Image (cartoon, rainbow, N blue to C red):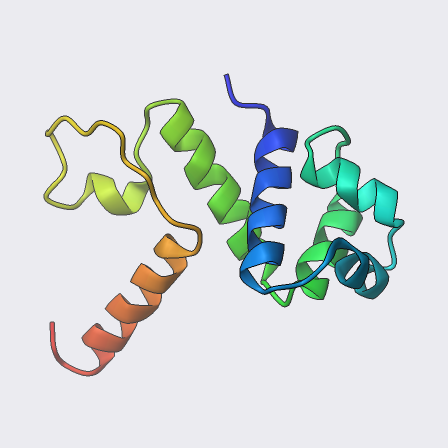
Amino acid sequence: MALVRTEIGDVLRDFRLQKGQTLRQVASRASVALGYLSELERGQKEASSEILASVAEALEVPLSVVLREVSDRIALVEGVLPEEFMASSLSGKEVSDLIVPIGFVQDFNEQLEKDLLGGRI
């Protein structure tokens, strides 16, 4: 069973590291205590919606992207593939050990939109 607070913490940490930022930098920009942010990332504390929005803004990541990433990771832990994959050629096939890199769904959707608007699809 996936704990939401653990997945949220993992996603926040992954985005922070991906952007090369320290806990101190993000905590300062989000106006939260350094120790509290550390506890959030380790899944030891629950984040209020206000704190989560503030941290996402400090990371310059839309809150919807953070929540989608959390949702996708929980779906994978539960053995349920995200909707984007259900309609694809993977539908009806067995998938094991699928690892989805952080931001994959967002990058995929952005590229699909560009391809559709550009007339490639």
